[in-house]
Amino acid sequence: MAKKQFKSESRRLLDLMINSIYTHKEIFLREIISNASDAIDKLCFISLTDDKVGLDRNDFKITIKADKDNRTLTITDNGIGMDKDDLENNLGTIASSGSYKFKQNMEEKQDDIDIIGQFGVGFYSAFMVAKKITVNTKKYGAETGFCWQSSGADGYTISELDKGTAGTEIILELKDNTEDESYDEYLEQYKLQSLVKKYSDYIRYPIMMDMTHSRVKEETKDSEKPEYEDYTETETLNSMVPIWQRRKQDVKQEEYDSFYNEKFMTMDKPLRTIVTSVEGVVTYKALLFIPASTPYDYYTKEYKKGLQLYSSGVLIMENCEELLPEHFRFVRGVVDSADLSLNISREMLQHDRHLLTIAQNIEKKIKNELNAMLTSDRENYEKFFSAFGRQLKYGVVSDYGMHKDALQELLMFYSSTEKKLVTLSEYVDRMKEEQKYIYFATGENAAAIDTLPQTELLRSKGFEILYCTEDVDEFTLQTLMTYKEKKFCSATNDDLGIENEENKEDEINNDALLTFVKETLGDKVSEVTSSKKLVSHPVCLTAKGGISFEMEKYFNSVQPNSGMKAQRVLELNLSHQAVKNMESLIQTDIEKAKKYAEVLYCQALLIAGLPLENPSEYTDLVCSIM
Image (cartoon, rainbow, N blue to C red; front, side):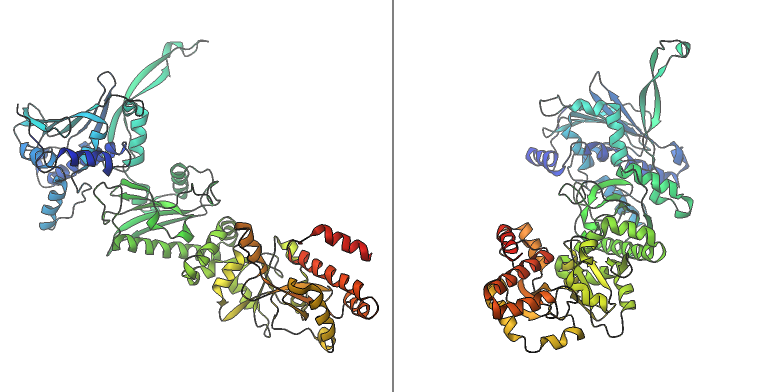
């Protein structure tokens, strides 16, 4: 029997396909099973109009058999099979797809049929694990079967074969084990079972395999030392019908919860389950989940965002990042579409308009569901926001604020008056008529913000303050800039847009005091002013310009040598007794007055949460005037 060479490709190209196109060797089983499913699809379609097929929908199946003694793995289907020409054209010509040609013919006849395989290279992925491949096949309606054999790029042989029924049997003789690779694992029943479950669980035909289990011998059940025996039974490894393909009204929430727990290895129930089915320019089904808590690695590089992507029930990508925007990276789920343009290995996607359309639709769907949860299920939304609110804020800040309009309604902040999380819309609805700004204050926690002197005047006026306790909060509000035409204003700004009538008279004729304090402190502050916001406290610091104290602290923690520094404005409460004492000391003991100025400045730093330049010097200074 003469050995034939592959028609269109050299050894180098075949080596490239085997070693470079596929990322993981285990993918070979998915490819062969997908081809088997295609073959059954073709015969199943023919059986609709040809009674001679003699098989109905329930008779079709794919079987897997592992022979450890001979180190062979056999995958068999009772699909349409191949004749000699098919073997020459499909297996003898790399990158020639019989499935694709079959689909083209059906489309010309205006018959809609779903075929997975379109590139004709999936079969050759088996050479990643096999040193020799034998294909025994007989085409439906043919008299003779054929045997195709190949050991790789050196060519193949085709011979006639006595085979009773139509279908295809693929026998893989596995490669010898090496120090780096153990090919024996592809003969272990639980490994094969897990690969089928991972990649081919939703193939529409049963994938059967003999599974060996252990049980107690019947005659020793009641003895103190029961004996065990192995038994073998044929099991269906795949579930066949994806839960997302079933009608929503036919699926209980408990089933969705169970699928979520099993698929994404989590113990808690999802806060929200989103089921969507779209037909039109692009057709797809999606089953999405909003988690109740953050995974342990969520804010690490190890966390992989993205949805599981299926094409006609076959897993294409474990984490398709393109389907989720970064601000919704917490969403888990699956998308199934036959309309996507896959590349040659079916492991990667071509970036086409279909993928973009699905991603845009999914983003809108998630946003609408979150809005619905905020409106109708406030308790669960607050639970969600506690887990993933920071991610939404990052989404506002990222991409130069491109997504701020889409996300601003989902944001929540702790309220000084409500003592709970509130939305921006709720804040604005409660604003007083004379209130110019949406006020916020930053600090490590709510308790720390409660004691900020800068908020005294706002509280005395009854103005609500949003508490920013996360490092991203202030960046978020500065990115938003306004909400419903109301500007955001920090409580530490030098101008709050309101007047303190009690301090107004004290502002007159105090230029000498302010000048004295500025000259004493020098470059430590950019300005010394009479405060319009202090009521009972003597002093505070406010930031001038575009950099706030929280920004200074954040950037210096991330990059200590950045030199980032806000312009410090020292505000004095001229009606406070400590300030009046300092003013009187200017005339009687100017050195002591300078110490007062230094102490007040250091106290302002401490209140603002900024580090003292020399804590020991400050301690000595306080002791010297006690």
